[in-house]
Length: 98
Image (tube, rainbow, N blue to C red):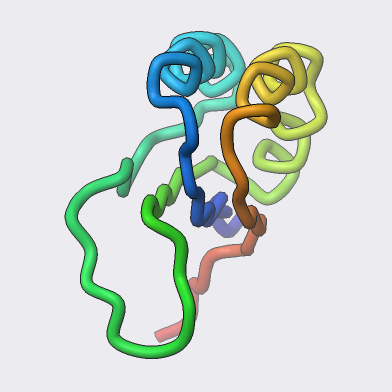
């Protein structure tokens, strides 16, 4: 079974409130086995367009990634995030090829 990833690009307009979102999302991420690979570190845009913050979260499976997003725990955290940020989020299945 392939792992799956959330890849998010976010512009944050209110860092204090966004910090509350980060606290609130911890329960959902723990429940679905999420692991942060990238969490807003320094980045250098080489091509195209991007937002100020990039986040990559690994999940044990595509279903776990989907279930986490749709979970009541994550949706409650998302309700905190939505008014104070703009972003793009995709869920993508990992590659197991050689």
